[in-house]
Amino acid sequence: MKLRLTLPDNIKKINTTIAARIPEEKYFRSAVHHRSVTSRVGLWLGIAFTVCFVTGLLSHFIQHPTSWFFWPSRPVNLYRVTQGTHVISGIAAIPLLFAKLWTVYPKLFSRPLVKSPVHAIERGSILLLSAAAFFELVTGLFNIFQNYPWPFYFPTIHYAIAWVAIGSILVHVAVKLPVIRLGLGEKPTIRPAEVGVSRRGFLRTTWVVSGAAVLATAGSTVPLLRGVSVLATRSGGGSQNLPVNRTAAHAGVVAAASDPNWRLEFRGPGGAVHRFSLDDLRAMPQTTADLPIACVEGWSVSATWSGVAVADLLRRVGATPGTAVVVHSMERNSIYATSTLPGEHTRDPLTLLALRLNGADIDLDHGYPCRIIAPSRPGVLQTKWVGGMAVVE
Amino acid sequence: MRVARIAFALPGLAALAYGALLAVRFVTHSFTDGRSALAYLIGGPVLHDALVAPVVGLVGLLICRWVGPHWRAPVRIGVAVSAVLALIAVPGIWRTDAGQHNPGLDDRNYAVGLVIALVVVWVGVGAGGWLRRHPPRPRAKRVSSSTPAARPGSP
Image 1 (tube, rainbow over the protein chains, first blue to last red):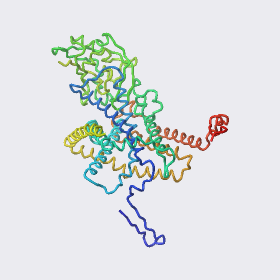
Image 2: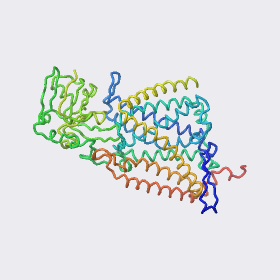
Image 3: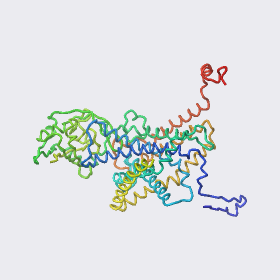
Image 4: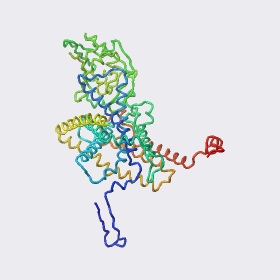
């Protein structure tokens, strides 16, 4: 396309013609537009996306369990580590995606636009890959900041497009495998290129930027980096030194949770209802454990929790530890008002109906009078303001 | 090679088909949500190809043109780190659509945090550039004993 702009007569002295063209592939003379660079950045981008996909899938299945899926309760930090990794790999992928696309940017201008039906499918699949990759990184980034400039429900579509992203990556690798092998077999040159940065310089820049992005955010889950990560979502604040993901006021439970006549209603085997006052629970054997609270949004923090082991409660109502238990919050209008503790977790002596946190009664915002805290579980399933429990029969 | 390509392509196509099915379900469930999600989906590559990539190219060109050879690598890394950190900080700073306030979450001062990070990055760029301009002199003795060319009789 050639656009001719002629200046108005009054400044005709300059008499210039400005030619604006869509660039052609050959105009990009930088050495970084080469398969040896693309394949290296692509390899790490592929690894980052795969790790992100697998860890995200784990959290999906823990929250939407199927009959064949099993999630262990130990090690206690397992969920925390997988979800910290989910967000860290996603953040690391942001600069990798930009770098990868820059190395292949000239191909956008290759002509003819479409050479054959196969070529058309290939170009289309790359557009899909790029769209899905950007979608996952942008929506994921806004979600960890609990910032939603869109009307749609985030988890459903983030999950759907994750399949599109990983699928189009796999197809892309299948199509490009011969080029990838060639590229990885060639050494990126050290000598500065004729135009701009050398291949090795570009790769080093990419690794440094990815590392910096991770350092700036990973303090949400890595305790040592909390003071370093100025862009971390977890600030270190919150009541009892623990972040609050939903306050009692926002959940509308202040009155119910503060009621001195509160009773825990536990529906045991055969539908028999057992009622426990807070004093009843305090009088039972107490278990203290250091357990993390960890969110799929990548933040996590360890704390000291005390309370009644769910296994002890089950024995008290005549059930066997290892029986699944449904937990009801006093909170009403939330999709997380109810959770199910699988048998694997009710069997674990560290799965608690917690009454105390870091040496004091649990704050209202953390689930007073009592909440579930189980090892290796998503934070949203650590139900707060517990009002009822029931064995699954 | 053929087997490897099939091993990537088949699960890839299956994942694509499943993702497409989920996406279609999402769109048919609510057309408004679907339209918005579609805009976000297409927005990424369009914004990148039409805006981000040309800016990257232009900035790279300016660095080559205006920055001296010793300073090019540190400045390039500094600009790239700054740009990515600034992008990551956007949802922390621009919070008109943020949900309810949760104590301890997303409540850092991200604008100040970004400025601190940028200061650290550019002090690093300054140090890196200065070191490249004034490389520490290697100790003469060590150089003469470890450099084969300095030995008598070596070619």
